Length: 368
Ligand code: SF4
Image (cartoon, rainbow, N blue to C red):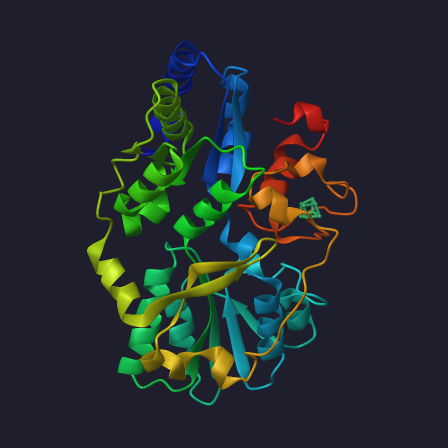
């Protein structure tokens, strides 16, 4: 398949690994920001192709993993109401809230449905004018345009039975939190290519300059990732800290202006909680005042629901690259994909799930 097989070509990957080995004379720690990148690295064993001086650590870019516990608890309160059809992407259903998950609400009779887009939820609102249809709008800059479009369409069609439970987060403020942490080891980033298809990458330049870190926009296939690592290593070795695009087939410097206008129309930037990390200033999107009538938190009166994170799960440290999944005492024992304690074990993009799927038989020291 074009755009996939050519970027999984083993000979191209081996050649890039050779170039990385030739370029690397020091030790460097590089964070891949997105959970999709983590899965590809672990699945294809890309870290084992690198010289010993390069350490890859896994970043916070898994939308399911960073959705705060209290958003799940709000979702559960709303989904349990008789008049509600609660719509979500499938991987949110098994993420544990503080006592239940959405799958349990469904098994207890709640009308919880898996959809593939907020527009599917909008179609349900048209079809069931006597029901309240709520879409769980989570994710990074990648999901924000479609969620914004759903809000615009709901108003345009005067669908007063549709609303969004919003937990949208933004990548750049999280990178700054990671870089500002005293224990941070990150010296370079592989930025998430799909986020940059929406936002572009110009806004990364001040971060690269302020913290002296190279930021390389990188795709998700083995060749994409190795190209990103090579570009990052070359910058680190030559003392540069620039923003580079190694995902040119998808990403333009200014991103997608139509999608950005749609986001701007519906959302504004605000402080947001991240699961396992806590509140990050100016790191999320909330509905603008003129869209408050599609805000599910207001409609169902759940704004005040607040939940403390459990202490056992160390996914916050994993999401900031401070630890790797096998270092968690619960990994593979009390916490497994079929019985997850934290979101990073649930999501198809979660680092704990990736290690469990591909590396659970190795000890912590062998697990990269
Ligand atoms: S293994 Fe489970 S408990 Fe440990 S950090 Fe990952 S999700 Fe949390």
